[in-house]
Image 1 (tube, rainbow, N blue to C red):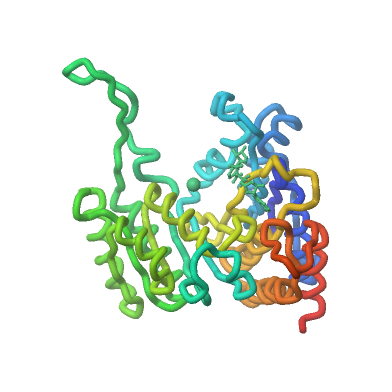
Image 2: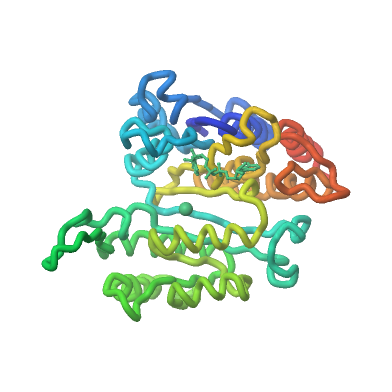
Length: 358
Ligand code: NAI
Ligand code: MG
C-alpha cells in the first residue's frame, strides 16, 4: 500500500498523525505499507514556495492513495488563487480528476445525543451521499460578469453536464449501492432544468445494467426536506456538484460533529484521496484538542475503496465504536459524565482497541 501523506496546515498534521498510527496498527505488517509525506497548503509555501509543489503532485500521482489533512490559513481568500494555501486541495482534485466524492453519514449510537434531531429520527442512520465533484455550474462555461441590454450589471454561470460525466458518476453510484442496501436515489431538478433532464435520462439508462439496485428519483427541494424529516429512507444518494455541496453538509449535521466525518474522492478506479470533511480549525490548532476520528475514519474508507479491505474498515469502525462506548470524548462531542480526552489520547484509545478488541 503506497500512500502519500499530505497533512497540510492547522490541525491537519495533528489529526493525520493519529490516523497514520491507526493505519499502522490495523495493517499490522509494516512491510506492507509505504508512507511518503509531502507538504501542501501553507506548509507547501514554506517548504517550496508553492501551496501545491510539483514534487508533492508527483508523489501524489505515484501513490495508490492519498491521505489528506487540511489546508488553508485564516484570510487566505485574499491571496491570488495560484498562491492560496486553501486552494491547493481544489487544484489537487482537478489535477487528479477526482470526480466522485463519497460522504458517508453514519450515526454512532453513542452520539445520538449530539444530533439536533430527535433520537428516533437519526438512530441507526447510515447513508452515503455521492457528489459529482468536477462538473456542473462550478466549472461550466461561459461564466463571468456582463452588462445587459438595459445597461444593468449581471453575474452569470452555466450549469452543464456531459453524458459521459453523468454516466461515470452513475456507475460509481450503482456499484456503491451494490456494496450496501442496494437502493440509489438520484437527486436533481428535472422539473425545471434541462441539465437535470439529461441527468435523469442517463441514470435510468445506466440503471438497466444494475437491475438488482432499486433506483428512485427525487427533486432536490424534496430531498432536502426528506433528509431532515426521514433520513433513514436513504441508502445511497447521488447528485451533481452544487446540489451535493449543499445536501452533503446538511446530511453531515444529522450525525453531530464535523470532527466525526470522513470523506473519499475517487477517480473511477481504486485510486483515491481521503480526508476529514473539516478544515484546519485555526481556533483549536496546536492545542491537542481536535477530534482525530474523522481522519481515522478516512483511513477506514481508504482501506475499503482503494485497497479492497472492507475487513480492515470494519475493524477501525469497531474500534471507534468501542472507544465511544468506553466514554472517550474530545471537546467537540463532550457530554457531561463522559471522559474528556485530547487528540493524542483519542488516537491511543483507538490503537489500543484495535490491538485488543473486546
Ligand atoms: P473548520 O472545519 O476548520 O472549522 C469549523 C469549526 O469546527 C471550528 O470551530 C473548528 O474548531 C471546529 N472543528 C473543525 N474540525 C474539528 C475537529 N476535528 N475537532 C474539533 N473541532 C473541529 O472550518 P473553517 O473555520 O470554515 O475554516 C478554517 C480554515 O480551514 C480556512 O482557512 C479554510 O479555508 C480551511 N478549510 C480547509 C478545508 C480542507 O482542507 N479540506 C475544508 C474547509 C476549510
Ligand atoms: Mg461545502
